[in-house]
Amino acid sequence: MKLSTVVRAAGQALALSLAWPMLAQASTAYLKWVPVQAPVASGASCGNGTPYHFFVNRAIGTRKTLIYFEGGGACWQQRECLGKGKFSEVATNPDGVPANYLSQVNLAAFGMVSPMIWRLSPLTRTVTQSWNLVYVPYCTGDVHTGNAVGVYGDQTPSSPLTYYHRGHVNAQQVAKWVAANLPSDELLVSGFSAGSTGATANYAMVRDTVRPARASMLNDAGPLFPAPQSSTAEQHPSLPLHNRIRQAWGFDRPGGVLTNLLSRYPQMEPVRSDLGAINNALARQFPQDRFGYAVMQQDGVFSTFSYRLFNPDIAGITDTRQRDAAYNKLWRKDLANWTAQLDQSPNIGYYVPLFRPLIKSHTLTTLDYAGTAIEDQGHRSIETFIQNTLDRSKPPIRAVERDQVSDYFRPADGIQWLIFLFQDLFV
Image 1 (tube, rainbow, N blue to C red):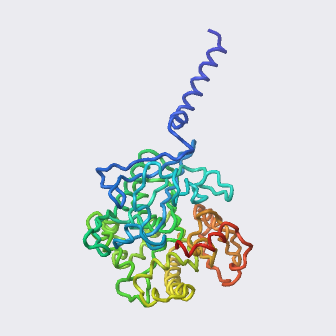
Image 2 (tube, one colour):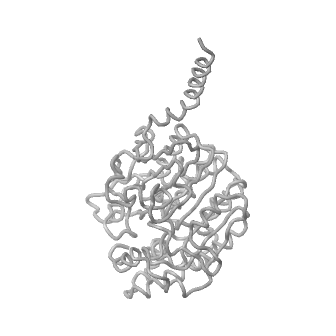
Image 3 (cartoon, rainbow, N blue to C red):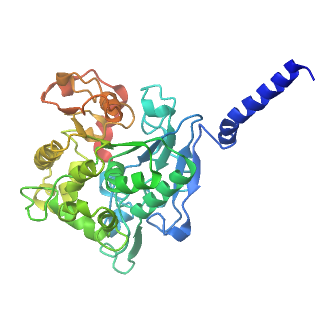
């Protein structure tokens, strides 16, 4: 056999051996959304008891993974858990999440809800579009934090509703699947609205399960504000909400999100008496990680959710603008307490613009990034903050927009302003 033939054969064998991992990955569907059903025996389910599905979109040649939690409304009463009411008042996906969820009209928008998970977004380029993507739908009414079964008959006592708050259980199954199937050198845990609350509450569990070399968290419009049990609602307006959800969704019960967190990290004990203490507790526990929190000063959706049921005097105001202004006053107080708390940890950043017309200034990473600049501090959009959260070479951005006027006079983003005209019908 000629030497050239031997060399060629050896080269082909070497090339095949090097290509094999890529070929093995390519044999699995990639660059498309694939459903994964969580094991029923695990207790994972949607609120109506149907099996829980999440969705994976693999990219070839990367060991970076984004786990992105879906947002939506929440519930602890019958009407809201049945999904009967406005978007901001009710549980999302009351009929469950089918395997074809990402081919239907819903919050996921066919996997295009955010540039962070839309690979070929014509609107915005962002770094995570080349990563492995895991989309975690929301169908449990508990901001991805529950492990409880509620029986609600307040609306129709003769026909009570049994509702499965299994968000924390579902998140555990997602993390286990990622650990077994998507080896990740770098991990970003994120989401929008209720999904970001779930990203924060489940971060330690997800990180410990996946075990990446480097990890970050980005919370978009789902803040857990400080609300010490020893304080009052006047001092910390989110206190009544926190008290209600920890009971309804089983935070302190065996297997609850708080019970599991404190059993693994007893040094996070301050979170037991203040759910909002989790922000700094995570930063202390994982000092090498980076945590980013983004929210709008004029967020009219999360503020309504936080205060509506606990402030009947405000809820009874008939003028929409006056009512929203009253909620925003409470929101601003919570924001001030929150940013002061976040300042205590050197690996936390925050990004707080004033206003954009999309869904009452709720969320910064959905649809596109238009209207998320903080011009008076030189930040062109939330994309700057996303990059900074993933970057370890620069200090975290801490930016609160001071200009309280200019955002209302930006050049119009046609889609956002169109939604703005009709948003009172659904939020």
